[in-house]
Amino acid sequence: MFTAILALACAVAPRAQSTLDREAERWVSRTLRQMSIDEKIGQLLTVGIESDFTPTDSEAFERAVRAIREQHIGGVVLFGVTPPSPGALLNSTYGGPALGQPLSAASTLNRLQSAARIPLLVAADFEFGLGMRLAGATTFPRAMAFGAAGDPALVEDAARITAREGRAIGVHLNLSPVSDVNNNARNPVINTRSFGEASDRVARMVSAYVRGLQSQGMLATLKHFPGHGDTDVDSHLGLPLVPHARARLDEIELPPFRAGIAAGAAAVMTSHILLPGLDPQPDTPATFSAPVTTMLLREELGFHGLVLTDSMKMQGLAKIASPREAVVRAILAGHDLLIDLPDAEDAFFAVAAGIDRGDISLERIDQSVTRILRAKARLGLHQQRSVNLDTVAEQVGGRAARAVAAQAGERSITLIRDERSSVPLTVPATASVLYLSVLDYPGGWGIAAPGRVLVPSLRARWPQLTAIELTDRTPAADLDAVRASLDTYDAIVVGVFVRTTSGSGRMDLPAPLARLLNDAGTRATEREVPMVALLFGNPYTATFLPGVPSLMLAYDYYDLAEQSAVRALVGERAIGGRLPVSLSPEFPVGHGLARAALAGLPAGR
Image (tube, rainbow, N blue to C red):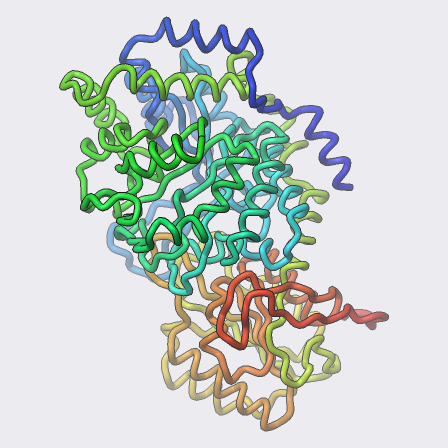
């Protein structure tokens, strides 16, 4: 089935050629000669757009067109949808992301391309597939799940599908793969976005992703250079520090970036992090650092592609520089594209003023513009910039692509503890089963409510299921009531949902909930009844549950992860995932208990 997907992709997806033919080279040279200074400045600028339906007669569309025509922006970054919410949150369940629509996104991008004299470079963050931004598109597990599955070929397949779907709607540059080595258990922003903590394994996965993505005509971006894995501050909220000397960076942080560059990655995104081992200047994150961006990345590592900033809206940057200062410093450091600017007009005038003052040379601008034009020509945008809306439904989503995602999810499931051999769970259909859905906090579940796959799946197998949701807002009296009822059940299944969401500042299971689960585990062991906890999201949550007799990790949340976990729990699928990170001496990298699928499951199981 997947062979058919790739055949179709090869037939319709433009290939991103690493070298340009004569026609493309002539287009780059001719376009550069014909550009005004204002147009050259604009090529370095990008703004964000959302992927919901955007009428041509709307303020949102007109705002984007003004940026194209007046600031001559060179690209846009496609996001999902941000639902409106009150300025002061009146209910903790408000907020959270929402998904856009593929056809709406493609239509908007086509119309914006028509408004631009020079083709726009369209970027998007599709770390785990288009489904993270667009409804109906394919959603893959997060990178750490692929690390647990341990198969670079699976990563390459997922990247190919992502490229096919992205190019079908008019996106050219994927702000992925995450190339950070997550070796800090308290990292609140990378975590499951990383393939793991073993640098060599991460490097293999990064290389596979680059190969798969670029084989189908989408450009890959290595991020967050030179490594955001060993931080304990979210750069969306503050300015992280990586205190290590250069020798340590060479050993741990840099190998995945070296591997990605060797695989031909077209772009690298730097990070808003301080690295005194590379640049000791105060208040000089990689975003502003020529020693990091130019000397290390370009001169020493030999990278000749596009260098991008991370989002220029992030608070880590805003705390040390004004928007205008940040733009100029990022360009002087060696960046080609300024991603997700808060104000394109303000950025345009900041760069123009920098040129007038002599701070930024025209030669420096021309270097970036040439690289940007070459990337656009490599994508074939000088020949065809719009997409065929009639083929979007054929190229985006579908059962064959979902099957690849399901395979990745199922192979990632990692059983790290099973003291009483409770997995697969084989209690009879007549058993009284308690399911506890344990959430870090109730807000922000905009895409999918936790448990919406688990609860009906478990109830189909055990009709006498009692399902209870607990959060950090559950009163202590209610927790005590659950604790008092534990002895009435024949088995206990727990779904633990702990997120590491960018900008949230949270990553832990609240202590009262952890105590309840440990107490439940102790009691289940005493009564000799099975208790299995399925951990969704942050894998380090396992270290707070020493009393739970059986622990299974899914590294993700939402429907695919829940479906994979249930199938593994009941023995429909084999379990073979291995930890891509170390959780404790008991649970080192590579640890994982194997379980074979059960043969001859009865109907309904």
